[in-house]
Amino acid sequence: MNEARTMAKSIVDRSGWHAPESSTGVAHEQGSSPTPVEDSARSTQNVPKAPTTQRRNRPVNEAPTLEELRARVHKDRHREIGNWLARRLARPAAVYGTWVAVRLGLSAHQVTLASLLASLGAAAAVASGSRGGFIAGAGLAALAFWLDRVDGQVARWRGTASLSGVYLDYLMHHAANLALGFALGYGLAARTGDPRWAIAGFAIAAGWALLSLHNDCRYKAFFQRLKREPGAFRVAGGSGGRPSP
Image (tube, rainbow, N blue to C red; front, side):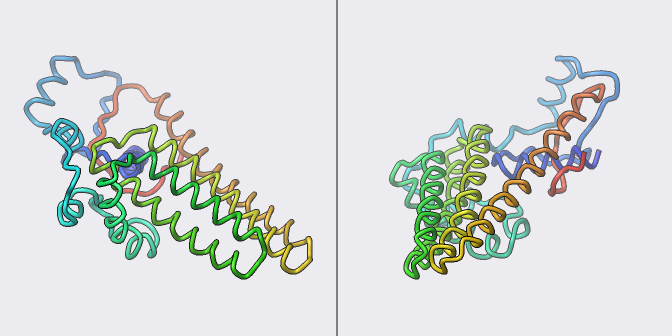
């Protein structure tokens, strides 16, 4: 049951959807599923509508103030989850990028693609092996990291958070990790004339890829386990973190 809560929170954090608070957490009814009448009665009497649904039904303000954005685009635990750089700098500062993106009419997918382009630009700059290339690469990598927070905030403001957005975000991460890891080694090899740096860069890229593959396999194994369980699962929140198969 703890695994179901964990997976619930992971999906909520990535998609921007927040289920209503419930004291029951995840209810698993062994061997039976709720009837349409019972499900309808329970949802009508006890479960309020999800905030995401309400946001999609109301008009989106294309010229929000910063205060309006801060009140709506941050996840509940944005100051607690993630590394220090994301918690203290990138997420709070991303509101300014969201303010610009909304006024320009950009979608969350477009911001994600901009983050990918910044990452690939960083890789190309670092791979040049020049001092200026390393400096430019570091700046572009920081920009990509920042934009990776902006896209989620744009999606939450517009009410367009979706699994396709999560999928595109994951693809962007994998591509950026591979490119940056190898580019670092290649750039050092070009600068020093030692080809062993290129091998080291390949090893870094492969290590990041294997780490990502490990996490993806854990999620897949978790879902396979859920498919074998009888009855029904009702997700009402979780404690965060990652699932353990």
